[in-house]
Image (spheres, rainbow, N blue to C red):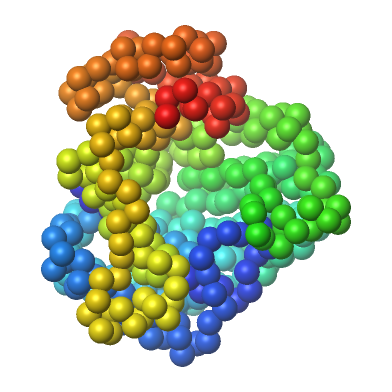
Length: 376
């Protein structure tokens, strides 16, 4: 089945740690965007992209700056152009500082059945450092409004390894999150991405991020607390109750095809060994290309057998399910150990081999960027 990603590149203000494409736009620009997405959907259909979609994901930026009527308009365009499978998962990312009881009720009525709420922390001081629009009280209110609106598949974002954060601070955040009882959590360590305001403050010495030892301790503490509370640690940064893994993101890690619509969106075609495509992160160029019926996306990469094999392993080892030797043999004619004997040997203490599948331990995930290099 195919997935659909819709990039909504608008923010009230950009968070200092964010390096995703987004702009501060007027209400008028936001109001015109659904029509551009509809044009892009029609263009993609004409270029051979196929539906129906099993998953749809509104990402950003801040998709919750769209009024619910706009979300409904976009989903109707998707339905007319490609259609949805039965019980499709339809996710919208939302900032607690941009939602109301009314807007969340509207999103649910429009067809959103999974909400990803960017809570990030329950600590007002840390929320201030992160430049978030909401405080602790507003974050809790947004969770309650989401439940009142009928969302029974709720994901919360948690950031850790924050400037000045202590283990006690993280324990307090985890206790708050568990009290909120989300079906899913995404837990990300804060990093100073190049050319972001956060990176500039770190480089100047104004802020200091925790060291690697604290990061590792925090990662393992989160793993211990959430697994003990009944969550499956199913991907490096993601935890879910039984039956609530994010199907859309699983599609990325399983290298299934997906179409990216919107300025800054990416796509993946699975034909042959696969290819990746990008819509340039330029809103004016995006509008101009669509209105003049020019190509809005270009090919970033076409894979050969070896690069497809490496990416398949790279993505699969991010997940608890790992990589299946049977699947590798069917697709590439080799097992993991046959394809990369030296890499398997060097990672032996962090790799588990259960019947047909290879996977990394949580301690291995901490070293993922280093351990995966021999497979690339």
